[in-house]
Each structure stands twice: as C-alpha cells, then as structure tokens.
Length: 312
Image (cartoon, helix red, strand yellow):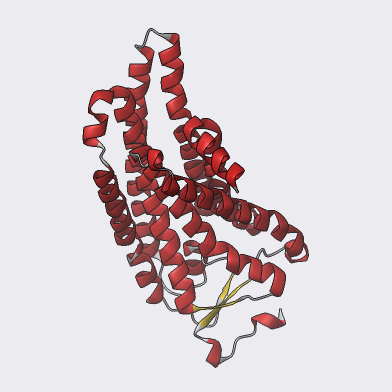
C-alpha cells in the first residue's frame, strides 16, 4: 500500500488501484483486455476505411454504422490505454483534470451512442415500413444532422457530471477502486453530500436510456407488425435479416450497461472486483463485437471488406 500514500502536493491527483483483490492476476487479466481492445480497433477502423473508400456504401445505414464505429473507438480508447498502463507498468496516478476529462468522454459517448442506436432503429423502420419514401426522408445530409444532434445531446448530458464532481470535496481519500475514472467510483471517495449527484445520475440515466429504449421498442413493434403481414416467405426472411444485425448490436450495447448499472447501484453484497470487471466488459465487448456482427450479417459490407483485404 506504499504507493497510495499522498502528500499535500499530491492533492491534484487520484490513484487508480486497478482491480482490488486481483492485483496478483493483473498481468493475466490484461491479456484478454488487450486482445479485445486491439480487435475492437482493427474491426472499427476497417469499417470506417471500407465505407469511406466504397462509394456504393455511402448510404444512411452505413453512415450510421460509421458513427457507431467512431463511438466504439472513442469509448475503449478513453479507458484501455490507462488500464493497461496500470496492469503492465503500475502507472496508477491520474490527475484530477485527466480523471474529469475521462468521465466527460465516457458520459458523452454513452449518450451519443444511445442516440445513434435510436437513429439506426428509425433507419430500419423506414426501410421496411415505408421503403418508397426511405431515400427522400433519410438523405445523407439528414444523417449528418442526426449525428451532430446526437453529439450535442451527449455533451449537454455529460457536462454537468464533471462540473458537479469538481465541486465535491475529496479530503484525504483520493484512492479510486477502479481501472478508470468511472463516475460513481469517483463520487464514492468524496467526503461531501452525494444526494443531488446520485439523484441527477439516476434521473438522467432513466430518462435518456428509458426514452431511447422506448423509441427502439416502438420502432421494432411497428417493424414486426409489417413483417408478419408479409405473405412471401422470401421477403419475410429478407426483412428479418435487415434487422438482425441492429438487434444484436442493440443487445450488446444495452445489456452490459443495464446489468452493470444495476449491480453497481443495488448489488452491495457483490465483491468490488465483479463491478470493475463488468464495467470493463461494458467498455470492451460492444466495440469488439459490433464490427463482427455487421460483417457477418450484412452481405454487401462483408463482400466489400473481403475485396479490400484481398487487394492488400
């Protein structure tokens, strides 16, 4: 514990412990973390490269996929380099400004990504339920505006969080039991009153996640109703296939987030390292799996990626 002794000159820094209780296994834990991170970067950068290069893929569905890839790259890159630095080189110190910046990025990207998933659900709704008007409603320019609005919404949601954290007193306890500056992990080490902070996080999380999930569920209820009315089995199968990838991505994005949030708020009896590992899975799993899901389920993207790989 000698590393954690702070002097008054250290009051501008925090200490990230990594995974408390599993320090002896940090090197072994880092191997799957690093593998998932590299796979996530390679997969998402491949999607960006192929869609950017192929003119035929400059369509709303693939532009939204690029937005999703950008959020995936941002979220895992905001966390993993520092986490791996802790595992490999014992680099546990992080400045207060660096910690608040990390929280801002993570909160912004989480809200932005959720809005992008709603836009993707709307894209599938139009493609199946109103295909004749699809091209006129969802133009590339409108997709760009949707992306900008999603980012603005993410910033508006995220900015109050680091501002409230920066006003909390931290006294002498500056040890964060985590691999990164997760919002609640930082708030818990404060010696101030967290009532308003907890209330804000709970209400905003429920409002944003609840609203986005409601819109997604509503879109898919309408989609299912249209699919069930299709008599042709071939058309029925084609319509289902266009939605499968997005449904898988949505489940990959929301399930770990909701499960991690519930265990963090209500699972007081669960060991701390379980919370931390779940939080890291929430950061790593979607960026790694999303490109694979879309690569497998979307034939046009899969063919273009294969063609570009063969040219290298």
